[in-house]
Amino acid sequence: MGGRGVPYRYGSHTDVNGRTQQATIDQLHTILTTLLPQTAGCRIDHAWCGVLGVPRDWCTTVGLDPRTRIGWAGGYVGLGVSSSNLSG
Image 1: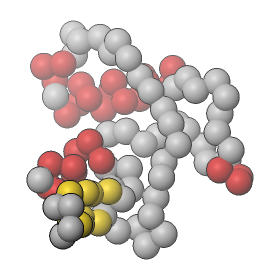
Image 2: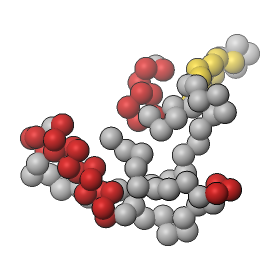
Image 3: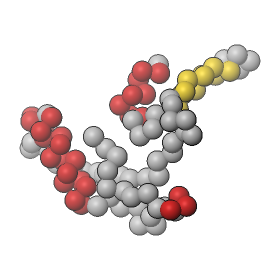
């Protein structure tokens, strides 16, 4: 659902304003109410935007440090919230 309305700026420069454009919020609200009609009366209280970090190979990675037994996962390529549950 997300991942729209924030252009890539050459050299990975970020927008100093940091606000999501209202047109983007409206578009996402339309998609939300189309997919889930019961949300039509709901209001969107918060919206955010930020820099998207993408691994060079565009692949999600899961790892485990055998010495510390600390596991990690990353590289969701913009699908972190919806796909992070697949990594445990």
